[in-house]
Image (tube, rainbow, N blue to C red):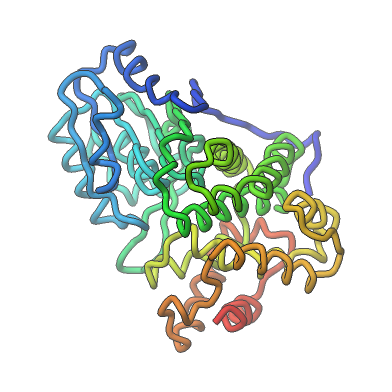
Length: 376
């Protein structure tokens, strides 16, 4: 684990607007920078409420963002952007929409190929403004510098990280999340929790991020069940929006670990929503890592209002029940994953070294396979 003397770089959106009703900041920002050709990158649902942003000029909307977006989906968005020549790109939706918006903003003014920018800091610049507006509480993508897209050939997620993909303004208005159904509220809430917990227990964990990570876990523990029970609970929605934002703060300088690596094949191979995949895997990796980060894991349990026992099985049982009681489906078989695919999934997860190398315990392919089998 790192300490306060370990160098770290922390990047944040230039402007953060947080709170109920802050959606009005979208029009103010666009007018202030003189935007005349805004392009909104969104999913079909949120594309139908783009008028709520009240953007000036000739607004164009790419409303075809898919869950777990792939390279063809990105290609369509970039092609539209090159034709529209936007001066402002707006990500409006969940993490998928915001991730594609980041990539569109850096790819729409040149001929750069996606393959040339995969990895850390390979983007050379950005000449259009970028605004991010989340409508779910899970990914925290509005605060980060990473974007992930699935390669349909290899069925692997490819990550681009660049300081040029950091938003000029992030607008986090919890009122936009009021329409999220309870099952998505539950899964995305645990995804936000996973961002915080994986960063908190990472080999790269850092005191400057730990405070966001632990507070994010506390917010999930306090508000997620309330928001699932009553989607109109504005205080609970605001608490989850803040937890998601804090999770996004964790992703930049520290990032996730085994939980996300083990969850990724569920999305890329079987199109299980990212939040649901992370929620399903969360208890498995938390319990596995506990012997290496016992004190921090006990702190996480306390933050969630669960018994603060230093036993991995107790930690697994408590967090499994936490997720299941929210209505999260915790069985792979119930989501259509065939048992004969578990081995290939274990191969793919074990190959995601950019995340597994940050995990506090070494995770073998066999251990990953065992997690899948237990989850089946």
